[in-house]
Length: 288
Image 1 (cartoon, rainbow, N blue to C red):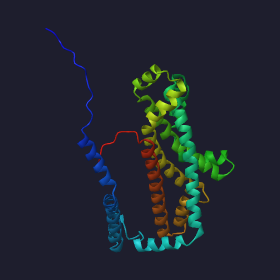
Image 2: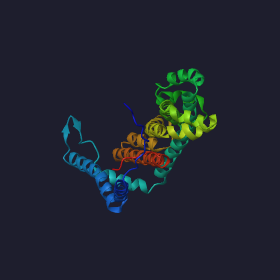
Image 3: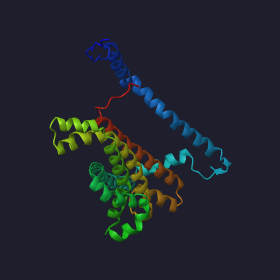
């Protein structure tokens, strides 16, 4: 019996399939597609707004007491009044500054330390236990310590924001490094790549999808902690504004603060997601 060995050839995707995929992407990115996407996004928000109006207008009391909750019209009037004050914008700028500084430092430190732990067994043995000891500590529990450590409350709030965002970034980077296919590094070594070239041209780009997943989580955690810190020890910020409104029994102002926090968190998370999509353009994506 003789076995004939035939050469293996790679068959490219049919041109019709490639053209169909490109056409579907163009349709999805066209103006009607964007409008329909925006409308679909608005449906649940409008539904929640309508439900809020009905519950407060009828003063429904069924375990939850909606007779004490300000109506949408009251919140709207309070929001209009806040738009005419300089303090509202100052509070937003203060919170955004704390988020950007704390999140930026956490991103830099988390990626570098995560890469070191993920790539070096020695660094992992020395640093990983310290990381795991501090990781379960809630960042908001550090407020008393931050007040004692830092000369100003501003620096303490930035530190708390950094502490909260650091661990999701570091842990996601470690796991992303461990998940890299070994064949990538072996192929690069075979082609003569040096250690630093493998680290920054293969390992880091390959881990970016996992790193950006951690960045998305870190942004949400950072907002939670910066608002909590502003409520406890801040003198400015949207969290301080919300808590101050509660102290003054300005309940529409409380809802304005809550909605402002939600919109700011949504906007910053969207920016992180857009940055991740742009950086990870090399990833194969299914056509939606």
